[in-house]
Image 1 (cartoon, rainbow, N blue to C red):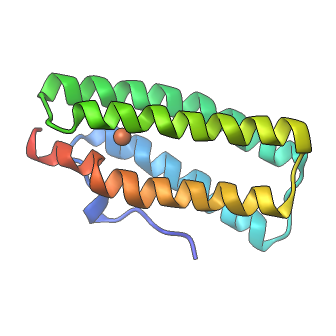
Image 2 (image 1 turned 60 degrees about the vertical axis):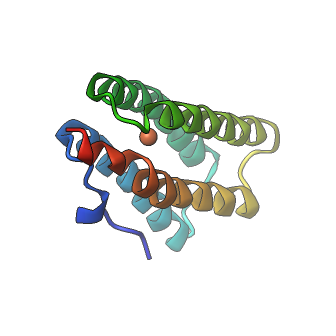
Length: 131
Ligand SMILES: [Fe+2]
């Protein structure tokens, strides 16, 4: 079942939270398509394209917020964002070479889920003490 945004994901910065909720929606949408066995190259391309554009601007916004707030997690957050973008780039490259496959879909799903659970809950929420 899709993980849902709840209070513990609250960063105290409303725009960041709004953007995180969009990421939850991407995961929920992917899970809906997986359940309906309704996934093709076109869908994954659209998902990866949208995710790439949205994520870059979200990371930028969040990094600026953390820097302005002098949040102690700012440097670590930026470093992890770099790693997430590298992992995203690997998915994009693999998709461009191999196209869609069950393995790629599952790994993309697990990557998104772990990002939302681990990154937001461990790093992004540290903003709460700085807002
Ligand atoms: Fe972050």
